[in-house]
Length: 547
Image (cartoon, rainbow, N blue to C red; front, top):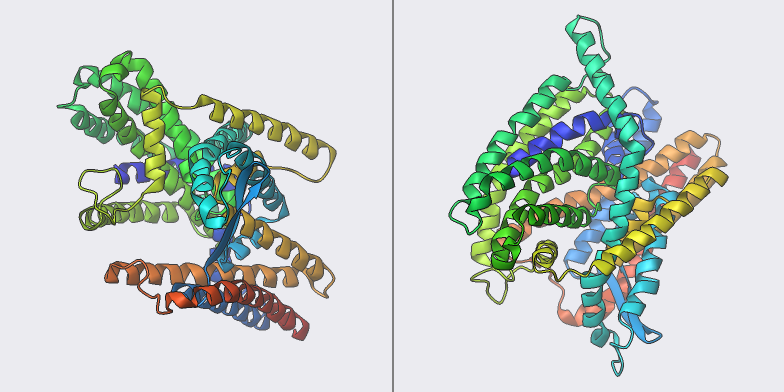
């Protein structure tokens, strides 16, 4: 299922490349970061400029990796949070002390940053205090409020955010459907020109569209076989063919929609921070409603079988979502460095196949070693898998008629309001309020949504300073490179740390500081975080002044 969904994620992202990458001004922070790394040392700039650029990336990388290492050692706090009362309710403020998120904020810019702050204010400043009103009477202190606030956020506020994202996603899709259709036409034109022997620029050479369409349709055969095998020996076997036909049509149509939405979100705030589980709520919700409509009253007698089938169908679409989310970042990198798209796309398919071979044994190892909360045989150290639990609860809510539609409806109304404001702003000023970014700000944890706008604000101040320098474009690029370094360093350390954790079987394998150091770590964390961030930008400013 992972391999098929992943390959479909690649094929669906091919026509989207022209619409969302080459013909779009979306920032694609990680794609741009990777592109800037690859450009260092090319012949586009002077030797001195490339040398300074390399220094900027290295300093940013060392700083972010160094801080991440200190956090893993428990020498400094990796995040800070507090819970407090607001009127009769309560809320929380927290921030992940991640230099990578500062870099992402610098790259995405103030428009997205402000939109995420608006979403944060709606969720944590208004909705959360209202939803917890009257539930915190007699409670005092951050620890006492934490459980109520966190439960309310995961069980209520996130569904409101998902409703906002759903409306914003539909609106975004309507706005980009024209460029997507144009991208498909351009791809067909490019394929015909290549067949006639005409020279087409290498940056315009995708895998030919007939092959893309053929692979996509051919993938439906194994999908149908797997669904057929899945439904055998279950209580809903008498619905086999109606369910399989529905699922295949659903994967074909909704897969393209989801690939478009996830690609757009990745372009806004990056693949790593993209709230795919929010899209997952929409996918499971729509799939469950359709399956319930096809099977009639079956949900009254066999809800568990229908939930399982819904999640199995959604698994294919999730493969499409995650891979299209990543692939468009890769294709953005390719655009920056002048790569040949079809070669990238073939490599991405190979990567999907290898990734799909690795996933099952890793999941099996985690299941046998720890188990998953709610699953048979789960022990005291079972893994929570919160996103999976959230999506399972959505499917159970549909078939058990227990889903609170008022939450999703409220989110949808908020989404409509944000869209109206955004359209007014775009027509009357140079500002905008991307509705999808507002929805992400509502849905994502505040630890993410608070730091990215801070990076955007810092990036704006830096760019204003760069405009006053002798060479504004060079100065801005150096800022881009330091932000790139912040992303690269922490990302590489994350991979290394994951390997250490996997080898040791301990989530805190590097934690050498004792628990008694926690108070000092909470003070040192934000202090060193500010010092590291400002130090990186001051270093770049010094390089520019010397050049």
